[in-house]
Image 1 (cartoon, helix red, strand yellow):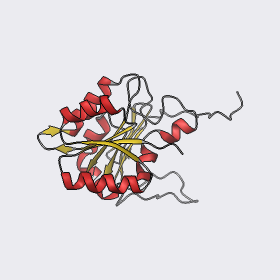
Image 2 (cartoon, rainbow, N blue to C red; image 1 turned 60 degrees about the vertical axis):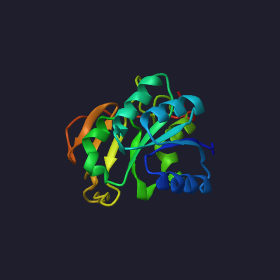
Image 3 (cartoon, rainbow, N blue to C red; image 1 turned 90 degrees about the vertical axis):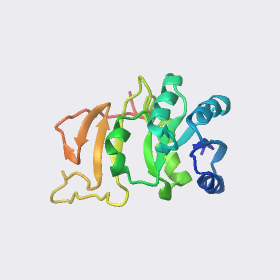
Length: 198
């Protein structure tokens, strides 16, 4: 498994050190930390991390704004931006869905495994280009959910049920679930990995 380089952006020094310690113990390489948007942009350019963790409420700055700036600077690829917060995803559902971030992770659930799953590494491993990252020209597949309430409601007798705790879903850039309800949009398509017969 590839070792991801991570830049952590948060204005709380205690959190920065705790997060660095945990992620490094779990096998990630924390290449740096930053406390402001300006510092984060400089560090991202200098350190070239694969993932940037960005606090949604970054002192006087906006984590959503920083995510947009990082995406604008790296239109041909670049780091996966994962928004983090002490607040629940449901508190920021619409801005998260509209952001340039790869996903959202509550700080209390921060782990190397969660970052790997959200960063585009699975899509890269399967050879699915343009998947697993949010950037111009890529397919926008996004799920905004509350980890405390997400649950599968489908049964064998009634398999076509939406999951509980999922507020927004975008498939190929189209909103398919909004406010927890199916919109009627059918934007998905079958994907073939490198082992598929062509």
